[in-house]
Image (cartoon, rainbow, N blue to C red; front, top):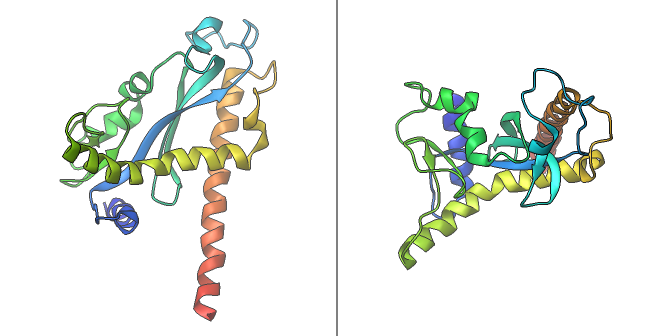
Length: 204
């Protein structure tokens, strides 16, 4: 619980109006892959090659669901569904959702910030649809939620292999393992950057 409150303080410091209830920004990203063939797919994956095509982006891929803190540090990553799956579907069947629904997993009033792909619940806040006053709230909501989009952007630009389709004949399972490793390295870079900056700031 102390970690979640620390995360909330990080978002509060970034908020223009001191929003103090955000403990994570959540979104989905399409991990670009070549069209998988039958040899690429493990027998137990449960999806055929066509399921990996994302009609919106006109690419084959995997749905990567990520949740980060105010620094862009990934707190939760799941890659379980093909590119044709919606972000809401991926969340609906995620282990994160099960955790969020457990009593006392989040303190009262704390929640995740997501976009309109998700729905409002006691543990999730999404943008309002409606009046001018509500659009003002959406602006401040977006200023925190955008951290996950920035985290995805940094991840892709940091690791060049993600800027093009994952090479042919790399299985879905290996692709998933690769992404999890890159996310951990992304977090390591954030941690090491902070470890270097803080001593320097003390010397100023």
